[in-house]
Image 1 (spheres, rainbow, N blue to C red):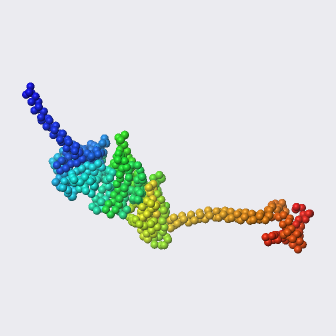
Image 2 (cartoon, rainbow, N blue to C red; image 1 turned 60 degrees about the vertical axis):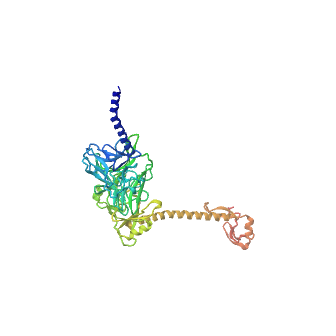
Image 3 (cartoon, one colour; image 1 turned 90 degrees about the vertical axis):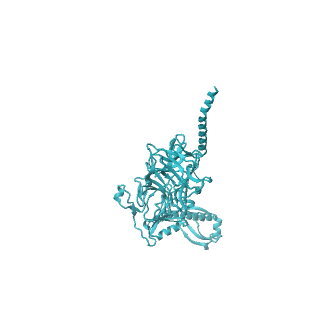
Length: 548
C-alpha cells in the first residue's frame, strides 16, 4: 500500500512542476501585459494589452485574406476595429512571427525563418529600451526607467506613423524641424490593409489647411483655419463630443482632437471604398459604429466643382453659379452643367487706374484655395484692402482670424478656386471693376435714401408749420377770442379775433371821428391801438347791415 502511495506521489511531481512553471509564466505575462523588453519577445498568439484594457496589440489576419499582420485594435469591441498596422505594405505569409527588440533598441517583426518583415529604424538609442502599449493606443519605445509618458522622451511612437485612423491625441500634420509628415492613408480594401490611393493630411503653405487626395489629385480641402474652425467644415463648432485644436508655429503645423467624455469611443477613419473621411462613434447598446460626420459632406465639397469664381450652393439647382459681377467663361458648357472652365469678370479690371477697381463683399463663403495667398496677422481689414489694391494680381482679401470681431489679413492672388456657400463661412471681399462693386450699389442706396428722405422732410415741415400755427393761435387767445367769419357765399374762410366792447372803445378812443378810416357797405371802419401797441382795424356794423 505504501509503495502504491509513493508511486502515485512520484507520478504527481512532474504535473506539479509543470503547473508551477505555468503559473510563474502566466504571472510574468500578467505583470507585463502592456510591455515587452529585449529578453521578452511577443510571439504569435500572444498580445499586449494597455493598462486600462482599451487597446490590444497582436497578430491578425483580416477578412478573407491569408496574410498575417501586426496591429492594434480595440480590445472590448466585439467587431474587431484595427486602428494601426505595422507591416501593412509587407505582410507575413506565416503564422510563426515574433516581435522583439534588437540590440540597437529597434522594434523588429521577424518571420518564421527569422528574416525582418518590418522594423522601426529609430536612430536614437537608450540604455534599457522597452516597448509599451499606452492607454491612448500609442505603441512606444522608451527607456525602462522613464515612466513620464512624455512624447519628447519616446525613442519611437506609432502616433508618428498613422495608418487609416486618427485617435484622440494623435497629431495630423507636420513637424517642420524634422520634416515628418503625419497623414492618414486608407486601406486598399476591407480585408487588405495595404496603402490605398486615398490620403488625408495638412496641405502646407502660408495658410495651411486640411486636404484629401485621390492619388496626387486634390479631392477635398477644408478651407483655412479662421481662429474658430475651418471655414468650409460644418460641425467643428462647439459640440458635446470633442474639442478640436489647431496648432501652427515655426516648429509644427497640425490638428488634433480630444474627447470630452472618457467613456466615449470616437475615431476618424479614412474610407477607401466610400472615398470619405468619417468620424465614427461606438454605440454600446446597439453594438455598432455610428457615423457622426463625413468629409466631403456633399457634392459642393468636391474640390473646385464650379471652377474659378464659381460658387457652389448645395440647395440650389443647378448647384453652381458665377459670383455676382462674373459670367461663365463658356456659356455653352455652363448651360450643359459642365462648370470646369468657371467664370470670368463681366467688366475687365482697370488695375493702376485710381478709383477704377473696387471690392464686393460676399458673406458666408468658404475661403478660396490658399495655394496662392499671403497673410499678415497684424493688419486691419482696411489695411488689408489697401494692400490688395497695391498689387494688380490681388483678387480678394478677408480677415485672417474671425474671432473677437476679426483681425489679420488674408490676400489671394490669381483666380479664386473652390468656392462654396458654407454655414461656417465668412466675409470675402472680391476685386472687380467699380461699375460692378458695392460702390454702384451704394449709389442706388443713396437714391433710395433720397426717395425716402424727401417725403419724411415734407412731413417734418408740415409738423413745424402746424406747431407754429398752434402757438400763434395760443398767443392770440391770450388777448381775445377766435371766431369764424363767412364770406359772401356763406363759406367759412378764415378765423378772426374779436374783443369786448370796452376794449374796442378804449382802442378806438370811443370810436373817435379822428380814428375813422372810412366807411363800407356795412358800416364805418375805425383804427384802433391795443394796450400792447398792436394796431387793429375795427368795423362798426350799422343796424341795416344784417351782419349782427
